[in-house]
Image (cartoon, rainbow over all chains, first blue to last red; front, side, top):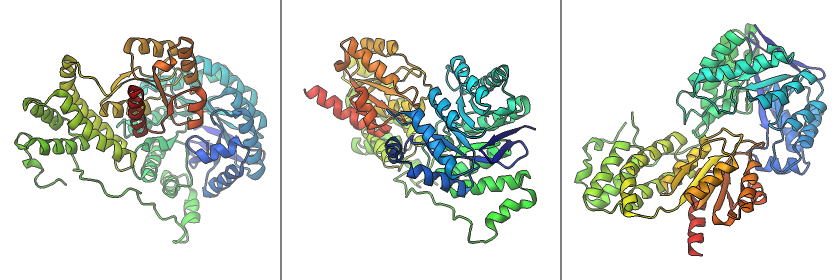
Amino acid sequence: MTDTIISSANKEVVIGFDRPFVVIGERINPTGRKLLAEEMKAGDYARVQSDALAQVEAGAGILDVNAGIPLADEPAILAECIRLIQSITDVPLCIDSSIVAALEAGLEAYQGKALLNSVTGEDERLEAVLPLVRKYGCAVVAISNDDSGISEDVNVRFEVARKIVERAMDHGIPASDVIVDPLVMPIGAINSAGQQVMHLVRRLRDELKVNTTCGASNLSFGLPNRDGLNAAFISMAIGSGMTSAITNPLHGNLMQAVRGANVVMGHDAECAAWIHSYRDPDSGEAPRRGRRGGRRRRVEKH
Amino acid sequence: MSDENEDDIVLSDLADDDLVEQMFDDLYDGLADEIREGTEILLGRGWDPKRVLDDALVGGMNIVGKDFRDGILFVPEVLLAANSMKSGMAILRPLLAATGAEPVGKMVIGTVKGDIHDIGKNLVGMMMEGAGFEVIDLGINTDAETYIAALHKERPDILGMSALLTTTMPYMKVVIDAMTEQGIRDDFIVMVGGAPLNEEFGNVIGADAYCRDAATAVEVAKSLVSLRRAS
């Protein structure tokens, strides 16, 4: 069994094989959120704060923080957001950027042991990010793709993950501080996307003995009732051994699926968390309905 | 699950107008065999290949594009529709080439250097083909030299670039700057897209248009190409 400890100044969260699943809240990310991007760029962080608190309230164990705004000073904004969020909540953070200078600025500002998001399998990337992980003693998300792309062959993706874990160990980083993202593809375009993830999670756990995470919402790209599909996927991913996911805890179906899967896996002793969430029959969130109306002249084909 | 009369439709019994209407439905439902058959029937009735393309296939894909934009159709359905269009195009392409018919326009498209995400780029390519454009797909991880070589070789109306990462999207400017350096920037319409981009970014790097989704890309492409051809 493997435990990965992520902490703030005074709170620890453990991602582990025999632990309740950890939801890493994805909302503090300006990609695709025009208003948030404009506000963050202008130095207005009110929505960052309210998003942080709402996600913690909804059950996020860790908060992802991304400041990827076009034509903005991403390192400065990311560091500023991290300081601000750490001043209003003690939930540990996941520092998210594709720019190395922003990752370092975030780590410099952070108090505790952060989760760094992310490193990929290209040599150049590994040699830029892993020294930071070592220097700051944080944990890191390893994404199983390299410059040849995202392979549809799960064996290729597994080998990329193995390469990253081995390279991390060369840098003095224990495998338990590497959390592998096996890559969730849109199932609307790639029908085997779900099976690929479940197969990889099992192998990553059994052979590399690492924790796993994923961008769970990618699966439902381009489909209706994404919340419902994401919930089905997350409980199956947990069943196959996944230990965390970067996703939206404000979606009621999703958190209910996570809590339920924790119970079924035996990771919710005496079902205490489940009972706590649903003791009052009126407190459970009503399932959201698909938002789309009828279809036009469409014939089902089987 | 199906219409009770569905099995009774014999495409070759339908008059031209009804057949085209039926092909719109069949494209919508992603029925590749039926589209192939309909295409052959229309050609057999003496239709010009360009007319089959414009009136039957592109007309049908317009409906698909609109409903995709409006959230009525979803990605797997659009992929099926595009695939069925391809079955008709496979018959029409050699005939169109032989008659020298002009496509609506031509586009070279690719995901920029350092970036391996291709689903959005593929969707744009398919929707553009569905609208009657000829599309040359350079794939993922495309460097400036490859883009520019393709521009020289293919002489398209449009260059389309896609990126899904904040680290890779600045490469679009590298490509546009290289085009400017070679004095060929204004020979082409440059369209850009991808999740982290926005309108402002498109303007700053000197693109002609930022398109937020595949349906928008088709609309923008059509209007920019017709503007250019009118001038």
